[in-house]
Length: 352
Image (cartoon, rainbow, N blue to C red; front, side):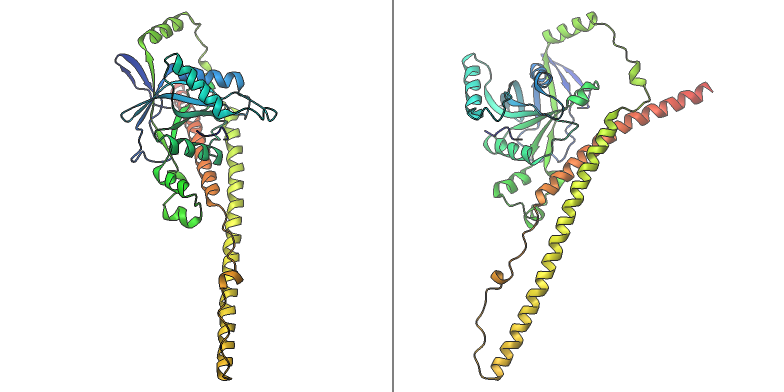
């Protein structure tokens, strides 16, 4: 078990229960030979995740929890969840693994699905592509092959569109993480790029007919919300915040590029020094040979010229992946605003 350290479709299908698709599986990598082709989530689990953030999440602070369920063929069914409790550094004696085991044991006693199938985490403006998430998901996926991580975005959800996405590490990245070799050569050999680090799995939210009837009754009783604000042409601060976060990540990327260029210059300089040293040794040996003296003993050049340590390329890939996420968020936001502007322009021309 891993430590806590760190949908846009609209199809509705009727069968024994109603399922609503919220994710189309477009993401940071193809599904390939993934053990899970679809994630089915009970509506109660979604409500628990939202309630968890509303009660304990504040600003940039994330909330996390455990997903429980079962695997049916190539479909992962998430039927329950429970949160990780918030604790401070003063709670040094708190054992998270023991807490998880006790929770699953209690659920098993009341005949509720208790199999561990992943974990969930909230995000702040889509800032979830981090090394902590990568390490945690690798631990889960290495122990339980079908594990997924659910990313819940409360800010997007507050705008009226549920944002809940399921991710898994790609098979190539799993192999690299198992080897624990994140050097530029290893990543290049495995053909790992930021686009193929994570794969998004389609999500389906499932509700029983009784719950759908209840929601229909509640909708009839609820007051009609004022939806005129959806036609507002003013841009909110979400675009500015995403742009600010994007600029911060671009600055981080530029610093990584500077480190890499420095490494390349040092490597080239060392190669020149090594070549000059070998030439001097060769000339000296020729002089000694002409004088009838024995050649100089062989030396281990790797000890004399220790190669500079290459910068970690995994961090650069994660930064590039986060930049890509911010760009996608900005693209979605600007597409909606441009659509409103074009619609307003058409209406104005029609009235004139």
